[in-house]
Image (tube, rainbow, N blue to C red; front, side):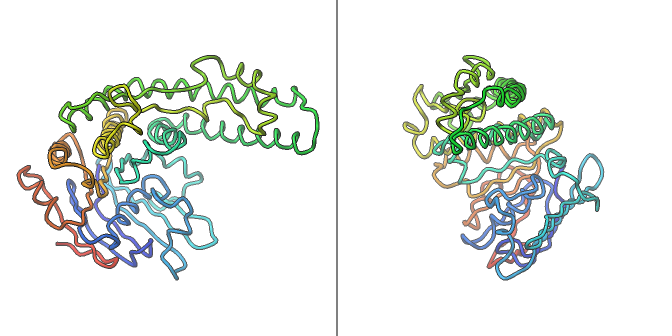
Length: 368
């Protein structure tokens, strides 16, 4: 599977660009702010129906323009697939596969397996648990549509339960336990399935991650990931009953899988506090490469790999190890951005890998 052709119109800082792509390595080179990351984000959009960076679609429309359009042709399972997205201001986004518009965008997730490694990935270590839950959910949703549906249902029920808690509190009414029983039973059912699937995911994912970190770091450090959930101690139904009064006072649901977390550690200590910048960068790159392998095994096809400005804070040894890894036939199509015009081509020179270079300047893309 690979992206053959990409057409971008009025997306962020790219006015119009239309180009053919190599099946293996594509390098987008140029100064910061030129539009390199925008290219990768456009490819990400075709896989996930949204931007990696901007959750509000209208913010992706180029300044002073009325719409954006991204159009890609993919080689997929021996045939060609055309994926199209168009967004006009104040109108519903249109997302199509082979000229047929989706009724639900969630039906597209997983069609184009893709992994993106970006500087903001260190937020997985530095930010709160929400970022790490999204990381887990984003991987699982690419191969398990039932999980995505269950997760969306859980979030809808959670929002309704929280609204009811707030309503009772604001109105100064005594909380009626029977009013919560239906919500609690449904939340329990959905939450239990989410908990089980996250456990299954971590069981298969962790050994792959550990192997990649060892390859990147040269085995210099011991790292680990632990899954933290209220449901490890007791059922969600029990938690909801036990904490109902606390929830009432807090005006939100205090226990559940919406509070789950992944605990990242190095040498038995929190990675956030004890990991150097290079170790943290190596950690998140290993997280993403493990995501690649995990999806590859389950989807039976090689995901597209996007590497955005990955060289910052990595020493030469780790950079060389990473480039050697991704140049192997184990990986499929790769997109890399770099401000240095020569670094990536030089790194791949000795690997005998077909490579295509593009110069990005002021939102225009030129085939080198």
